[in-house]
Structures are given as structure tokens and as C-alpha cells.
Length: 614
Image (cartoon, rainbow, N blue to C red; front, side, top):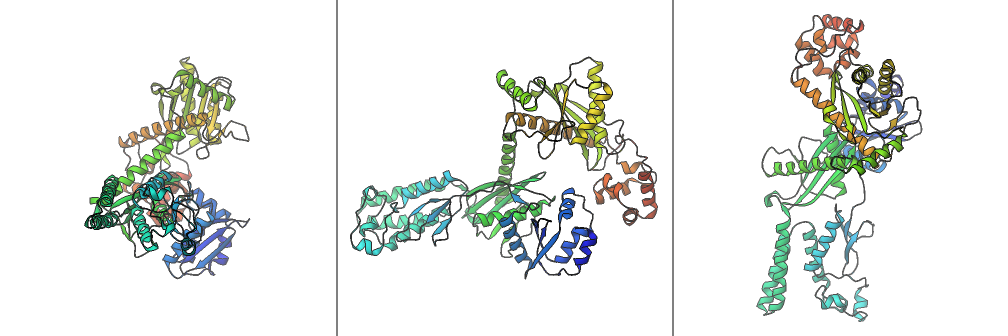
């Protein structure tokens, strides 16, 4: 839908709070959003210039808009979350590792059975949970069985069947694990007390359970039932030991949900700690996929709502690292700076960082310390997967790095026999390229690297990986042709997001199996060149090697240059501004200088001596 097409319907949109839905030409739901003013929010998609390609792509696909007016922002928030969870539109934030979690069910029947299930049926039964770990649930049930006498049989213990004497007590009764309701040895009221103790244990609230058993133990001792009192005493000790093993933060904190988030490109990781009665009873880290460069506050707000719903949390407080919007006004949102709550937040942050690193390590293959046969096997697999003419015992990988669209540098890492050869790593200050040009920057780096090897008569790598699209690969090969080195090395491009590998001239990319050792090693090489390039770039910035390009324009001072970078984020974005936009930002005189400078392409070399304002 174009801006002109949107103008025809803009005036028909309400100014009330609500949710809106975007559909494409195939009537597929693309996106669900919320707004306190529907007309203003929807209009923003069609009237402002987006720096994000993904947002631009969404707008291009919109063919139909639907909206629903709701009474308040809170209702809009809740409805938006419900619709996203139900339909999972392509451009919304999505939970990547969504799965079913185990529950403990108290069956709706006489003398209810208690057991583990993954299926939640609307049959009137009570479902406790869900829980993040099956092993934890089984441990809880074993603990409950050892301390609370509940039946495990599947008999229909209706009052009529019990009155008719249809059943006989089983071995569980004689072992002391059941009180024998099947032969009227236990009343439903007494059985209900056991179920209440079960609920307390599952919520981490062990104090009422311990007090209940202490009361029973004293009563047994008064009745001189010392054997029963001894059994109860052992149960109390068992419960106190179990309570000591729990992660208790502070008993005065009560119930709260703690969240920490870590964003990495289009993926966000969120750790959730559920605290009840000062005890952490559940921990869970999830992976979320973003699509429209949503701010981290929006991602966390959405994740909080989803996770609290998933795990049926009724905690009155949410502890988060920064302020977020949350639709339930009765819920307290806390951003702690010190104390026990800050320690909880730090614990969640530790977990989310560990989870991200574990995911990264699982996706990669490190051959350091592996035997030669293992290394050779993986390299042989790469040779077969990519149909290379030789085993790639020498691999090199190139990547460009810049800062907010300015100050480009390039980096190259070298792997020999599948492990880093750090003495062969190289970084390149861009010398011949003016402005930001990824293709030309890649060509310069590749040309300089292999011209040096050519002059020094050094061996060339069997495989060269260009981290980027077909444009970067084509530019690299252009440099190789100019050096007359065609056929000396195999060059491949690696798509940044899809992890697809492609060769020059091929229409179809090569998609290696996601968990194959070939792709894991290639990921390791790519991540290493990212690390090396970014480290080099940060070092140069901290040394003040770069100078803001805008300062090179005669008549534009440091303050004006910093103002433009702060407002528009990058030199590239400033170059794209119209004369009207520049005039609004810095006045007509300076706007004319800037516009004339860029229009005549009189850009100075990007890397100069000087200082970059940080």
C-alpha cells in the first residue's frame, strides 16, 4: 500500500485506543499492533521515513487494514498479546522455542489422583504449573509421595462403590503410602487436607506444611502414639532439608517475577525467575525472534506478558532491568538499583548470558585440541559438501566493519587445519575507497591480501569465505581477476542471516544441514572474523583514529557534525536527507554547504587522523 493509497482511508480511522491488523494481497495476516490512538499510529507507517529495511518491506506488503476499538490501552495490550500468540504473524515478535510444558493435575473425582501430564483438558480438573522441567516435576512428585499420603490407584472411589465394599486396600496402604480411602479408612476431608499440603509444597510454601505435621506430631505424642510421632518427625526433618536446598533469596520478598533480557541482532533471550514466598521455584530462559527492529523495552514488555500467561503467574510484582509498559495497573513494576531485588536481577542476567553463550557454542564447532583424524574428517566433509577440488586445510574469511554507516575497515582471519592461525590474521585500513561502499571496500581488502601473497610467493588458501551477499562476493572476484589469480582459490559468499552459501554465477544457494559439522565450523570462522573486525574497529575509535566525515565539509564545525550524527544516527542517513530536512535541522546556510558537498561527491578519504566523538 502506497502513501497515496493510504491517504484515501486515513480520515476513516478512529482516534480511539485499539489494535490493528495488516494483511497482504493473499489475505495473510502480517502484523498485529496496539495503539492508544489508532489513526496516529497507523498513519506513522505511511508518513514517516523508516531507516529499517524490514519496516519498509512490511509497509510494501500491506494491502488491507483491519482494526478493533477497545475501551482502554490495557485492553489493547491484552488483546494484542492474545492475537499474536494465536496467529503468530510473520512480522511480530515470536517465541522461537515454544513447546508444551508439564503440569501436575489434581483430577476432578472422588479422592482425586495426582499425576504428571502435558495435556491440559477442560474437564474441571485443577492444573498446577506448568513447570519448566520434567525432571523437576518428577522430583517434586517423589517428594510429595514420601511425605503426603495420596492414592495412586485408578479405582472409581465413589461413595456408593466404597459403601458396597468393592475394594480392598493394596500394598501402598501396608507400606504407609496411602491411608486406604477405598475401605473408608480415610475421609474426603482428611484427603483434602493432604491436597492442600501438596499445593503449598508446589508453590514453595513449606512453612504451613511443616506446621501441620508438627501439630499432628504433638497430638500423636499426647496420645502416646510414639511410632506415629517418630514418622511425622522424620517427615518434618525431610521438609526442612528440602527447604534448605531451595534457592531462598529473602523470606520478606514474597512473590515476584524477575526478568532479564539480552538482545543479539534479530534474536532476544529472556530469563524468567518465578519467586514465591522468597524462594525461586522456577527458572526459564526463552529465545524470541524480532522482525521490525523493535526497541528492547517493547520486546521485554511483550515477553513478560506472554511468560506470565504461560506459567499462570499471579505475582503482584515484576522486577525488570529498565522501565517497561505493562497493561495491568495493579501490578508493581520495579527497577531495583541495590539490595536483594538487584541481586535477583543480576542472577537472571547471569543466566541469560550463559544461555546465549550455550546456544552459540552449540551452533559452532571448535577443533582446537581435537586429534588430527577428527580435523581431517570435518575438512573432508566441507570438501564434499561444497564440492571443492581440494581439502580446505587453509581457509580465510573476510568481513567489513563500520560504525553507524561510517568509518569502514576490513578484517581477515585464517584457519589452518580447522583451527585459528592468529599470526596470519590481518586487518585493513581502507585507503582507496571514498565514502561508504561495502563492495569497493571488500575488493580493496581482498586485492591487497592476495597481491601480497602473490609478491611473496606464499601459498594461497583452498577456500576463501566472503561474509556478505552476492555483491561483496562479486567485488572480491573482480579483484582476483585483476590480479590474474582466477582458479587459484575457491571463493564463496555467506549470507549474513540465512547462513546460505553461494558461488559466483549460481542461481541456487547451498544450504548445509543446520547441525552439520561443516556449517558449525563455517559459523565458527565467521564469528571469529566478526570478533576480530569489531575489536579492531573499537580500538581505532578509542584511539581517536577516525574523524567525523561531516567535519571535513568547509564551514561545518564539530558541534554541527555531532548534532547531525546524534539526530540522524549516521553519515549515510545525513547524505540521504532532502534539502528541506537539512534546513530544518541546521538552517539554510549550512544545509546548502552539506547538500553541495555530497551532490558533487567530493568526499575525503574515510580514515583520517583525528578524533571521533563518542
